[in-house]
Length: 73
Image 1: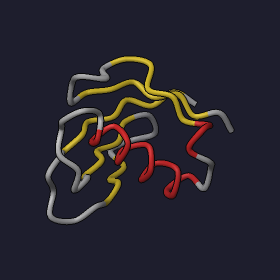
Image 2 (image 1 turned 45 degrees about the vertical axis):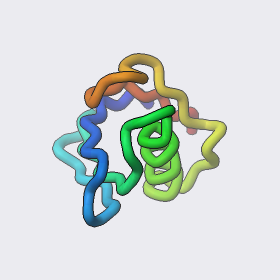
Image 3 (image 1 turned 90 degrees about the horizontal axis):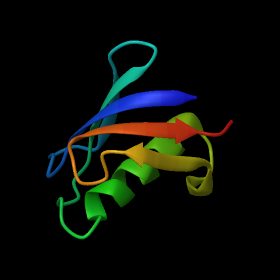
C-alpha cells in the first residue's frame, strides 16, 4: 500500500487523520531532529494499521514534511 503523508511535528496530540484513500495527515509529538519525527510517524502508522514497524518504509521525503510511505500488508 502506497500512502502520501503530511507530517505535523511537535503536535499537542498524536493522531492520524485520513483525508482520502491515499492521503493522511500524521500529528506527532516528536521534534523534527535526527529522525525522531520519522520514528514517531512510523510508530503511529504501525498502531493505526495494526502492522509491525518493520513493515513500514519511508520511500521519499525523509527530511521533508510530505512523505511517501509504503506499508507491506
